[in-house]
Image 1 (cartoon, helix red, strand yellow):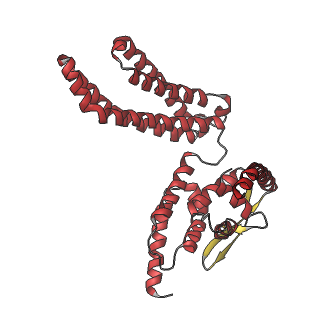
Image 2 (tube, chains in turn brown, purple):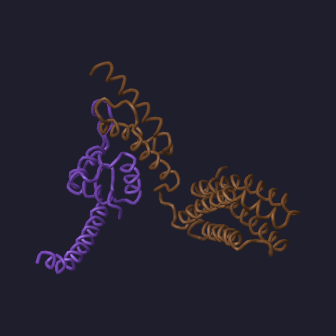
Image 3 (cartoon, one colour):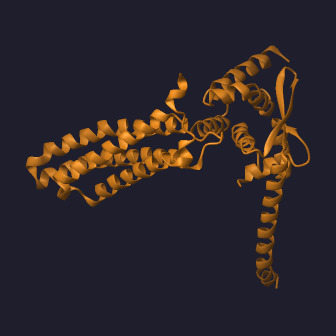
Length: 216
Length: 107
């Protein structure tokens, strides 16, 4: 093997190892060397870089293994994790809608009710600041519940109570002013929250969660 | 069952294989149509092992690289046989219904 080819292989190996970092630690400990051997065997002659398609395939596998580990996770927990990811997606969709329509909505409100123009801006800023936080929260809870952390169950339930209370509060104050679309969006998020919390408190899911006392 | 999973089980049906061996077998079985990538292969193997359909059948080091062999478990053999029978029945039904149309096309 020429020195140039060896240097290329070493570089390719480093590249593959970097991409393999997206797999769970336990999987890497057992399989990284084996997967690396397969990747190098399948590589084209003289290849020194990780290709886009194979890189994407590896990242997708790693993300999948982290979010839906094969280790016997009860169906209820798997469904709850998927619902929480759907919750994050719904918040993202709401955020994109607000961003895309912000100018038009402000213009329309300013034209019809000049006095409330600032209130709309404040509401939009609140959504822009709050949505990334909510998305992060959904993703974090999806991950932690998937890991079977008991505290994640409690935080999920607490978040759902907050969501319900804030929803009821908003409804009691300005129910008449909400557009049907935003009511439907809020109801969807609430239903996702309700179903995921119900699922993680079913007896089947309960056995999967580690009790916190066990740490001592 | 996804096609990749079906083909991986099929590749292991007549004996154990290592990771790269499965990739080449699957390419051969599918007449070059399916080229499994490592990420897809190992995500599927991870799940198949957890479900008890595939088991590790030994390891060896070749040219300084780790090779792990996989084999079908009895349960994996049963699942593959059931899936193959289902696909065969579906294919037979499709072909039977297509036959009059094909005959008309030829006339």
